[in-house]
Image (tube, rainbow, N blue to C red; front, top):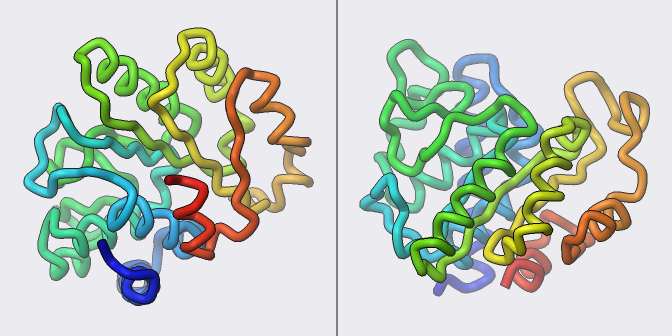
Length: 224
């Protein structure tokens, strides 16, 4: 297992990758990608049991689903740096005929991507389906999903949250990037989310909070 210093060094490299990808094509979403760097590095380099040879069914390994697909640069970097595809391919981000599209998709057959994402609000439903599939197949591995806070304004999220609690989907850990920003401005001005902890607990979820989502030690403590 990598040390904290090694994980922090990986985070620095991932941030460089994000800036190079988005600057190279003068487009993309660097902000959310940079903000979720420690979370993604913690998952792929410490928390998850995953196979970089990549099988679509994901049997016997932990699975991750990125619901807020616009932060693809951080995911692409982490996948490349953990061995799913060559790091050199990051230079093709958002270019014609690239496998690294602005929003992750499956028809490019990029290793590590199991579902197209970016249509906000849908990722939790997909993750719940994968988690239930693991239960039905006697697979004890976990499923993880990541969501933006602005995404919580989508009704499908709360339908999925109710369904997961009702069906005791306890092999799923969903994380919220609570950065207070969305494409139209601050979430408090666009549509206030209120007390998210109280909301999720009211929907039957166990809630853990990480005071600093860019502190990898705090993230590891919360996710382990």
